[in-house]
Length: 408
Image (cartoon, rainbow, N blue to C red; front, side, top):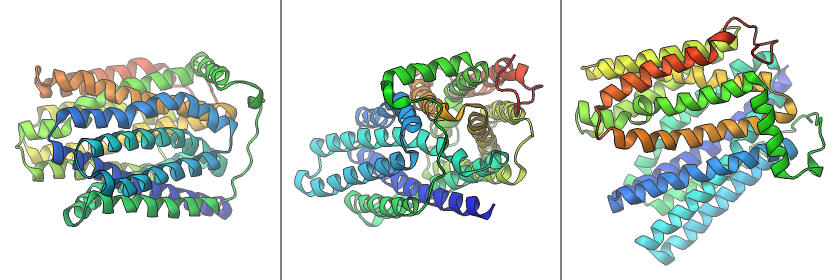
């Protein structure tokens, strides 16, 4: 018992360290380009380069996570990202500021996004190799807490470092955290997993097709993936356009924007702690449904709120609901998908996030300039989110998801 806990703790710490370094550097890159260019085109290009490569490679990286050593994939991803960052450190003095630097940052963002796309399904599918099934929800809650704490600390760290230093100096953090994270992960012996099919004799495209066939012929997994993608898309107005809403509604102040970000991450941290101690409902789908309904209800409340303090309180609880949804989805996939398919399913899940989020931004961002963002939050983030959750997964709420692999 203690052995798997020790291994899992080291694994989570290693991933938290590398995530912190990557997050600090990513914030620093975005802020540096934003402040130096004040250009929507450059910021948009940076956003696309940060999400699109991850979306595209997720279809392939899921197969790799099922075919090869997941530990090795994680180490290689971190190493390649660190090498890319090191190349930037060397190049910046040679190319200076200006367009050349911005193009170099775009290329680096593409490589970093590809690395994240390879790493994400490998990490999520490796957790069941370390953790007994009955502890997966608790462990995923702890992981969500760790990620939220990192996301809470990274912007503050990036801002503080950039205030007293330069982008080039900030990049060294990514190198240091990659070395520490890879070093810790290298110390863990990962239990061998059963391979029920000979992946080596098939092409990546063939195995990707098998994964898609499995995902969408298994009614439970297929519905879960589509529900999650739809949830992320509809969550954009209330969640990812929060800064725009706050600046328009309560005032264009750094205090308001910072408070919103910090409270949101604090809520997600609280949600991770709640799930890690409580473990959610014994029926995982019930945890998911309650999270979605709460998420939509809170979005309606935030959209109708006229008081900033009330908005912040709702945002904190909103973060808890978001963590419930994401943790329940992750745990359900770990519990209900075949071990030999988990890498591919998590690859598809990563593609849902990295594809539906920018799609939602592309739709709701411009729409927010035409339609009141309050209306978008209430209708899409609230009413449609609740309806989508209930209509897509209500039939499974009365089934024992621990023993039933599919919706009947």
